[in-house]
Image: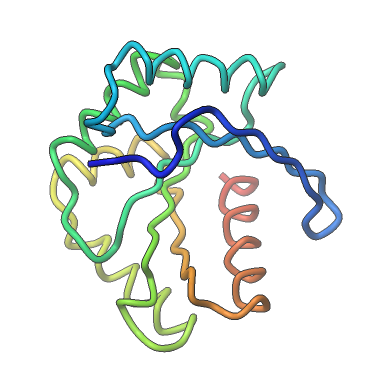
Length: 158
């Protein structure tokens, strides 16, 4: 697998009146890079996010199976950030548009898919206190805002 992000990238912006700082890192499953290079870039993200991240996002696809490599990436994250990371972890399933036509139907379909997920992924979700949301990159700006609010609500509530 190849990660879209080659180096640690930092962006800031306002959404719904809140200042959001986002640090994107190379994917831990990137087979084009050595683990040392990836860990160094992920380590940079921690430094950039000082005094520490408030939310760790593990992005997965809804339209394909959870792989051993993705599970190993999760294990690497736990090694890097410690067990404490689960307090800040939320799972974001991309490609929700493959499940149904409307945002409401997609959310229901995602909930049904989560019930059928394999053991390792269920463990990851359990570690994350079942904080997960779906994203639809083809959604309208209004629907994307609703999905972003889902992220904020799920993180703040649990």
